[in-house]
Amino acid sequence: MTPTPPAWFKSSYSGNDGPDCVEVAISPPHSPSVHIRDSKNKDGARLAFTGGAWSEFVEFAAGR
Picture (cartoon, rainbow, N blue to C red):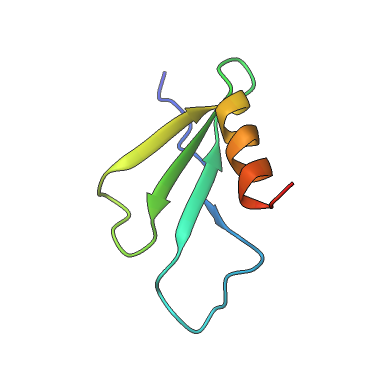
């Protein structure tokens, strides 16, 4: 059985006029994690975070 590839998306704050962006993918519910990659190098290095760590980062980045 071949695993389903992650569905990558860009932030709604990212413009479409430039290639510099970070993309995010959420893994399936059975092993929740958040994956990050550089849109300019889709086959390059990726980071993975637990759902809790990602939530803490987003909260911090939002200044709450």
